[in-house]
Image 1 (cartoon, rainbow, N blue to C red):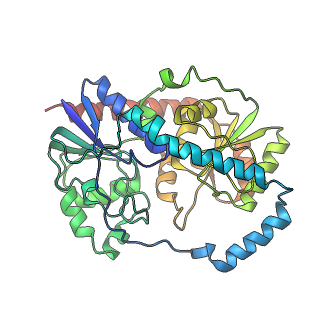
Image 2: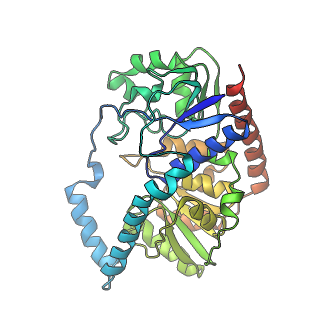
Length: 375
């Protein structure tokens, strides 16, 4: 059986790669011939808004940065972080994407037995990213597959109200109605789909949970110990948040290693490839993150972690993160105020219960993937 996966596989992002890799490996383990399918980006319906990061706020932040975080002639160090980051960015195309079988040549509308859209924020059509936009192909439009399904698809922070406000709710509903099987990654997505679709909708965890990565990770040597992983997109942690992170690290005599991207007010960035990221998380004493997949990695490897949940703006991630934490009974790992970071990290996690949930969710996810291959 030939299965196509349409995901965010060309987006340079650790989580996007690792969830795509897992789906590929899981389908191959079930005996399917697997290929990745490309989509054509659609029109961008929304624009980036400054919001609270407007001009006045940026001026104040700059003043605070000099008062609270003097650079101490550290510009060259920070510049070296950005050079490493950009170098790694470009290596995705030469070193990382080939592991998925993805080449420079785009693969549009192949003939398939099944097209699986997901995982990741494939339905997040109200975002300012021009590499995605409102792409109808991510909703299964004009495909050449015998069977059309999703796995753990997500609307991200696109809501039902947003779809209605931009006048695309009915069109999206029409496209959703053509799917043979639907799987959602979070409650927001499930609730939207449940109003659009008459059939059964399965709720499944991110594919990263469905693959063990032992062959890829276990032989990677981590030449660090006694450290905290800070995992976030570039410059996401504010001065106040950074101060609390640094304070906690100093109190517990831990080194900080920033992964994913450099942070403006925290030293210690390492430019690593995806499987190296997993190895460093696996060996960390603590993980501090504000991303969905940073939280997934932490849960998968039973780390003591804290997740900053962003409720507003372009970096808003509360829909998917609150659902992820609730799924595993870990809502108390959510950081709403930076001053609460220490108390959250000091609390132990009952990973016996968490791992039981992981086992159940992995079984459910793998059974769903198996059902896609059944006639």
